Amino acid sequence: MAILFTNIKQLLTFAGDSAPRAGAAMREIGLVKNAAVLVNGGIIEAAGPRAAVARHRLAKKARKVEVNGVCLPGFVDSHTHAVFAEPRLKDFSMRAAGASYQEIKAAGGGIISSIGAVRAQPLKAMAAQLAARAARFLECGTTTIEVKSGYGLSLDSELKMLRAVREAQKFTPLEMLPTLLAAHSVPPEFKGDAQKYLAHVIAEILPKAAAEKLAVFADIFCEKGYFTPEQTTAYLKEAARLGLRPKVHSEQLSNYGGTRAGAAAGAISADHADHVYAEDIAALRDSGTIATLLPASNYYLGLSKYPPASELIAEGVPVALATDFNPGTCPCWNMQFVLSAACTHCAMTPEEAICAATVNGAWALGIGDRAGSVTPGMQADLAFFEADDYRELAYYFGANQNLLTVKKGEIVHPRF
Ligand code: NIG
Ligand code: FE
Image (cartoon, rainbow, N blue to C red):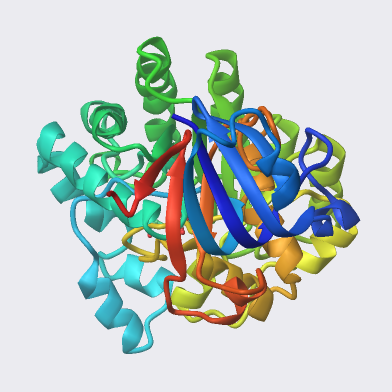
């Protein structure tokens, strides 16, 4: 049945080119005041001034929902590690006492400390836990997320993580796109031999994930103590050959070369970008790779350095924002907080931040042709917030201002 969402104080349509937005285009939000959105069959039929939408042939018979708030495209959170068995509270206590990410790793915490519980967890329990977490994303206005493996680091457990995403998808309307992150860290069995582990990943894990079509993307953590730029190139090239689109965790803790390796391998996005220099930025712009910034992880790690968003935008690199939801560096699933962190710490304007969290997030997942904007023919993925002005979303922080979330034309939060 058609639904007419009406009495919308401000609608941000992000009408524009069907392409990732860069430069000034990131500030073109397509604002309509006193608006309405008509959805039918999972698709947006009409969006714009209330009076004009009310004249649509389907409007009269549609169910009417008085919104009395702000409407955006549903958030597209293009970088999460939402499958993990246990929170890392020991790491948290160490960090609160002043330890850095690297010091926590040296003390036996970090990524490797997540693998025991992930390997032991049955697939069904893993899927149920992910489906429960999916509800938390929906209630904050997120309609699509990317989900990475990377806490199993063995053939069976990495495939199990990806299968859990597929299984959980049966129980939640939140759309989830899976990423193989087998190259997240070197598991203990390989005794620090990254080259040997990567050879195993390339020979065994990548081909099986690709053959079973368990992942859309392949990702690698390019950083000192993890994987080198050369290893990144080898892994991403092989992933692309097998049909998985490359992504990379790069320049998170230092300037190490992962961004350029990712751009050269045709990565759809290079994520973190905290320590990018001019040559990395030029490589991103020239390859059309999206820079996905994750400022909530900088916040959680207590870092004073944040990614240079305004420089990336000024240089014409399309910028996306995502949570990086994970147990070690960002236990936060709320994209509204990410907007706040981006505006407060990365000098992004609220317009740029919301564009980065919707349209450009969708392009960072290769689905920008069907999601990320509120225009006729697009998937009806919407988020409504209790606000008079869209800037309030990035202004108030630490709260959930969401009123209603719509996925493929269905109200999925709150459930009636
Ligand atoms: O994006 N940097 C690598 N991966 C995650 C952290 C994962 C963890 O510490 O569990 C990140 O920050
Ligand atoms: Fe990450």
